[in-house]
Length: 422
Figure 1: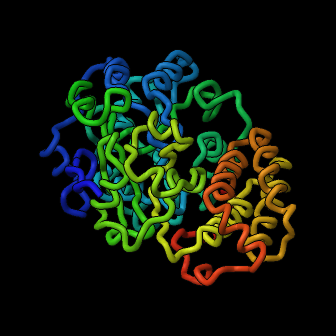
Figure 2: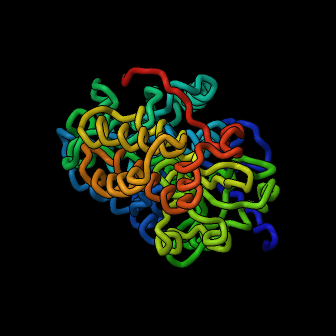
Figure 3: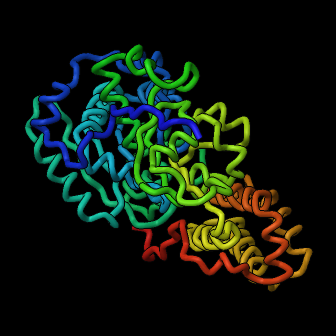
């Protein structure tokens, strides 16, 4: 294993304490006046940190191009973080809320917005109180657009951007088919910019220090830093800020190292993929490099599975979670995912014959791309990776039933979420 990568501290403070508005201003000063930030974001190469890694400048220009006097823009900061394996956004919001709020103000000015929303899960009461206090601290600040705090239902797909628009339009927070996308027809029919809260925090720093500063770390194709939730078999689970290109073994070393020999790593969260540890261990967390082996950082999750823990059992629980978190709007989700999860469970428990594995592989392909939203796609990508990485273990489970390691406590959280979509 290589030495621990040097720590990068742009977004996160050195001490885990909430930063007041006064301390924030003393550290960074006010946001710069004027416009033209979109061009600087383009030069910086900033991409979104909510999962899709879409170029931020392209998204902002698309929103701005549709603004009219009768249809001013809406800016939404997505901090719902519905991925159970991730807490990077909650950590950022809890410690540096004003960095995110600066980014919201800058975006609102750039795209001519008259409404700004911070969207967080109602599951996190303490965080909501912190954010309410931060918003109050800024009330009356010269020329700032008031920011509304809106609570999201505690459902896995409620943080998807079209689900957010539906919630802000007074409907259930379920995803809708696209087009139109929010930048075309969003909140109240207005052009709507939805970015992840980490994206807004990076925006606030680029506005102050510029594109060249932002690109001084990372790689030429993937500049800057990213927040990652590192969990599983590591001594110090938590959130790290790393430069793009930092190797997975360096990230695990910075988390105190692995508690046992790693056998697989889940990259990206529950819409991500498993990969054998020896295939990913020396790879850099660079979107292009990860794509070359079929991976994506997604929700910013690195979860280490050690020897002595059962990947089949972990995957079984995650697939059951994803099946019950369907919005129930189409056949692939309401019928396909439960069938996929149930059959995987039967294999895991030794209750299915040999054809079951072939059915799972076929369904993982047939369901993908046919849903009303991307939920079936993410679930089937996860399932396909489990079928590949844990192929030998699945065959043993099928023949002999659950292994001894399957009785160990879960590494990956799979909560039973409360019902309701509002």
